[in-house]
Image (cartoon, rainbow, N blue to C red; front, side, top):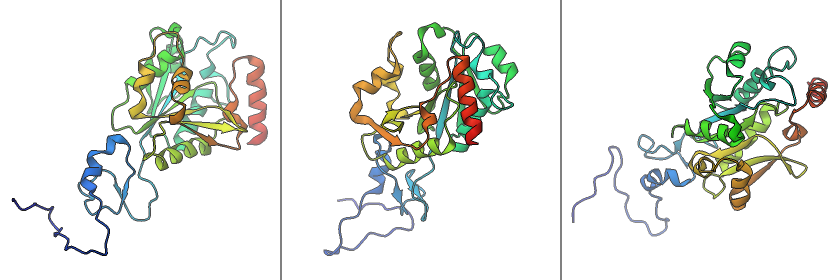
Length: 262
């Protein structure tokens, strides 16, 4: 029988009946796509993409924020992305919260108002994607964003631009819970306030296909309802995860609440 070749610096372990068999980290590496938990202090750190340094509780997680700004804003009467949010466009505020919350890649999906939004907001460092047919519904913008993610991305946060009261801590809680749950079957993570689900929704990159495959007219809710056993709720004390602004009255109320809490 041929002798096994070990990586440089490792010697074959001597049998010891009192010790449990060592976990095969190389097998874990091959199973990364299946969602296995990361390996702490892996002896094959130079080979193992799941290894992370001593003292860290979770590895770095590459999170993309997909900001949905392609709606027609009929009830608002103007692009919601450019509504004034305490001296700057609402879209800029949402992008900053996403950055502060741990999102490392930023995408904005625009529709017919794309040119106006590009001129009216600072989108430096942001990838802007144009939805040519936003009449197909919000799911078409979600699909467009997901289709532009590569496999260096671990997960994505789906975030309607008209949800400006989400806080960085809400985003971090979603990402941290996702990181701690990668060995489980959970693939969709949603914030809840007093038992009610809100925004944004975090989706594992390996679970985007059910969203991409949805036909026109369907909504993301269809995927959520069909996969309840893979949905994890993340409680928050922030009622803002349940707030969106569709009308001028809702906008004024939300802005007053945000200023009062700042």
